[in-house]
Length: 386
Image (cartoon, one colour):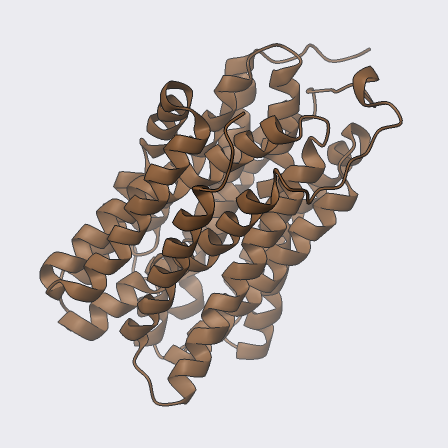
């Protein structure tokens, strides 16, 4: 007997919950944990950059897998499997202080993150499209904002005395019930195996209409990930380990992220997704330049505020704009965009590692991010409105 389909609101809430789990509790909790793990002696700054890189390798592999596994039946198997992988790797991180094992665990966690971050929004978007409610799809990314806020609180909870590997316990334990409920709800969302209007048709993912969007999104992945990974660490280097901004920078960013999915979803409907994206990339570029050019006590919180307010908007607007450019591609296009985003995210910490190996300073790597976001802005100007 088939299960009753969830309401659109419940479906959006379930998708948001799963993005909270994998992105907030799996991926980006590493950013506020990073200076703590370095201070605990578990990692050096260079090892921390390596861990970030391996997590992004996994994210890319997960997104690439989603290009292949994009049908409704495949998603019903792949989404629960990826969630199990996420929970298992987080639990294993609570038990390991060996750097080699940490690398493999962060790689596996990245794979689960990449799969969920592609598959869940893509399934939701197609499911909502069949109900003429696709405008709600961007609200799923409220889960990322909520996850960032929760990760900032769980990274160093005041009532617990945690050290090194133990610091992963709060995120691991909270992931279990949230992942279970989200997966149960998403499992009831069924799609036709192949819509009639696309039968026998498969266009190329890359064409004259979509190429500028892909190129802009490539710059966005490289540009945002440096402050999103290293901002508390850069604050520590510029202001001292005991400065309040080391922890507050992430909380500012996380709190700014919380309403941003709703704001950019609304702006996209009002201004058009293309025009909203142009404004979004300009805002992200200004955020990174603020950290580079302004005094640290001003530049750090301003970067956190502006980046937190904008980076999710680029994700949801690009996904929706891409589908409007090639509506017959559906989840394949979403997966390809996220795979490209993941690839450029992988390049960024690798380039940061090369810079550090040459004797450079971590804060200077933000120049790369600023340049990448200006690139994104210029390419968005070439995208045609639909």
